[in-house]
Image 1 (cartoon, helix red, strand yellow):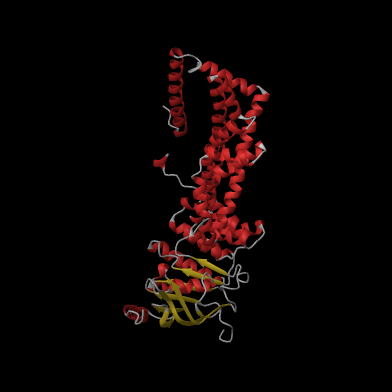
Image 2: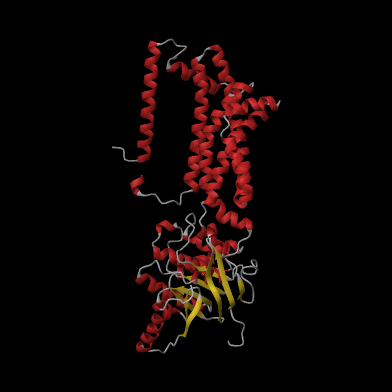
Length: 257
Length: 257
């Protein structure tokens, strides 16, 4: 009998994925392959991308764009969050703008970026930053504001210099918020980058998806989609691993395990 | 001792807080004047809301007086931020331990802020944990320690920086009587051994009588209603008499609140 909760969770996830795969395979028996290709075709195409350097580079290009956009939005978001956190005056001007930005669909930013800019990479970077900036800013700001007043006063009693205060109190306080922001925005960024590449790029997973659509190649479309899903899963797991390490001090109730 | 400059000097100190939403002002401290000599332990006693904590925060330099002068070892604790680095140690009502730091790292906090060399600071921190009976718990996170142990860590944290002034804000109020009694004894021993000046805020009469060389009884808004010098040779009857005196003063509501 398996008692390790992590193994149980992994088996449960594998079981539901297996059911989905079986249903797909059954569908492939009854529908044309351009609608529901057999799983072995999808797996083969996925593997082909892995072993082909030029194709793998296309995945890396998309991954690089996601990281660049997320880092840009994270740095800018942190800066804006600090400015808002330090000044209610700035907050009253910037917050409405961020709320407004949040309401603009990613596709609108794609159109705007294509009209405004020439360079493909800058266009995509611009779209990525603008679509994930509000979430980063609000999440970092919330984490900053949740800082304990008691701990702040206790730390201030030792009279730390600004950088030391940031290192010993502010950074450990906002780390959980930063990690959550990265996890949430990673999924969003993966979706947005595909839209941006689909419409305005000549390389990357989004561009490859456009090609599969033009060729009516469902197995190829799924194989490229899987690349992105796998990328998100790997990075998510890396963030979770980092989170488990950095937040190892948290008490866990036996009931919660 | 009489010709020496006092360690703490309050001259006609008034503190008014502005209530949120324009609901007027709150007078927390009203023309308060008192002195604490170097090496003296003063217990400040009063009911909840009498302004003890405001007085405490004024000495700690966490807030600024509205009028009057607060002088700690000849300097202004609010304005002279750098001067007081490592000069004031505070033991708060709650332990205020940083949950992401182990017991050892929590004791190291003040030393870290004061830029004490790592090997030296670790030696000091381990020494204080050992003196307070916490050897073997250096690497435990706060959630793994009992309330009494956590408060011991916070005492070690305050003593580790070797402050000239110790401020204690009802540090044992959340503990059971047996643990509180042990820690009180430990505290008195440490203060006397290390020749510290201490202000000990409490609402427990026996605790004030046990700890203070002098007891100041506060009325709301923080003003001294009674001042008693401790007589270490006092017998039980005299102590009961003092206890009754304090009770009588506390029973009278402050006339102008």
